[in-house]
Length: 354
Image 1 (cartoon, rainbow, N blue to C red):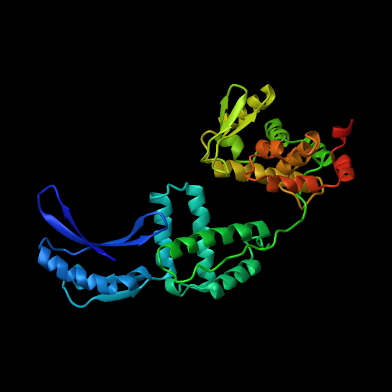
Image 2: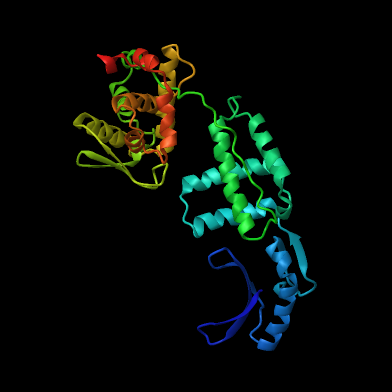
């Protein structure tokens, strides 16, 4: 039940509020603090009773503007909270309370923007399993700017983002049912790695040595593209900070001298440019090289996949070791690299068997 609260300001005056909270399983969590715009206790009690009558609806997501909150008085206004309103509050909560990093916030915004496109700006309280199904159908049919559909892994990421939002709504009594959201069944297609003969063919092309050194670095270390720009060299170790790592935990990669010099070179060369510009440039250049080599279904990230396949063989299938080297959160992610047939590994990475 909402509580009547009195707050004493520095000037000695008292101000009254109605505090609406909800038990989140651990503690009472504030949902809304409604100013009663009076320093008179008797008046505050009267106004607080009006808030109590509307408390269930406020917890359900209805947005009230009470008469004393309006400059000219008048009747209490009721505004139904829409999905877009709730998204704004959710993003503010993730940013201000939980301290979620900007990149993750952008992923939330992108997924929730797609949700609104799919189901329109409906009242938050009406969100149901039917709308989630509509959202998933929308994602499956969605075409990117290049005309290609969204990959299954990306769809599941969007579903996870929306699931986090939905759980947040339920915890605050903004929706009645905590509907289950299932991800799409995992695609068991094998990682799209770059074979050793193709990589050697690219390295023999007439391309700037700095660019080829960068590609070789990622082939040898399995780093994600952005990681080579955001880390710090510490002796023979390369430390990637938690806010730059995909798993939000610091990642440490042991380097040889040539790899250290390569990172120093590319970081100095690009120090005045935003990270996203560097990523796009190197990614595009590698895609051009792949096409010149006759490969149209691989990308820069394939270098990381190549590292994973090689390390599974070199460590005799030590998933825990390779998981840590690649910065995976779970060994189940690393298992994908163990599903490549041994004869295919021997064919695609001949130097491993010489």
